Length: 209
Length: 159
Image 1 (cartoon, rainbow over the protein chains, first blue to last red):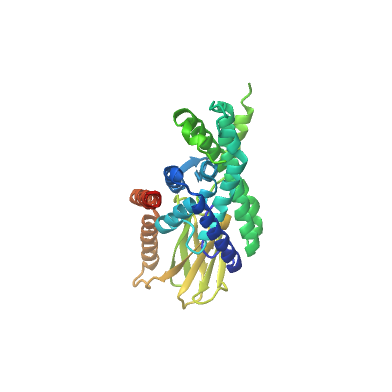
Image 2: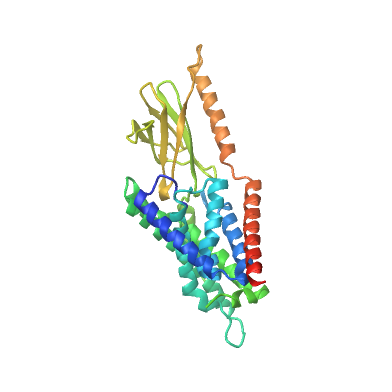
């Protein structure tokens, strides 16, 4: 889902870069000291996830895990994904430096949405009892769906705004092609949230209001 | 309990070809054509995607076509150059490269020489595109370092 260099038009690139910079600045202000280790951990997971290809049928998909990071971090995903995307562009040539802003928005906005939509599901009750396991699994799976679905929608929007040949047919394809990513990301995210609740409940309790 | 939902899911997964995120292209300018190979970063061939050859300093294509099932393409071009090969795939994938001019082979087996050069260039490109473990570990190292700097600043602010 990394858009490549030379695909988007200049106004779209500039607008996305400005919005992304604002998001990074806002996210940095919200990054508390206590959140730092989790932010680094999820940043590293997001950075590595896209290099892991899971063979599915004749092709292969790679994990994205933006929804999971968003659920745990909220607006802090902006600086976290910025670092991860910058490193992916520098080390793996995924995306590129001029499209960094657009790719950051595509990954981070759905992640923030996942945070606000799903955080209620994973926080322990007022008396400290953890949420039921089923609810955690639902929240984790929904992370995958919100994260990937939102990213596909935003990528399509960026392509539409830029016009150009071939794109109109491709936009429907983008969502269709990511169907297996939905499944894999949802499964991994659900498993991760359930595991966190068992071995590290404090991590979920720390999900910010 | 029926297995139908699972079977449907499995069928959907098998039916959809999913491309990894990166697209890469290698191309060379031979006597009368630009040939090349487009692959995704997981080294699967980029089959049936748009490919164009443009002269340097111009965006209007000299020749257009699609890649074959093996990701290879061959577009006839007039002599001259240098030419760029541009491939555009699904999901906003795009890659371009300079089509390196291959020297005209002397003797009777020019096509065999060109084929050998093509294969060598494809191999070199594959090695260059490979994601290496040291890059992944290096990237994690950067993230740890950046988190360390942030923690240092946070500690200074508090203390």
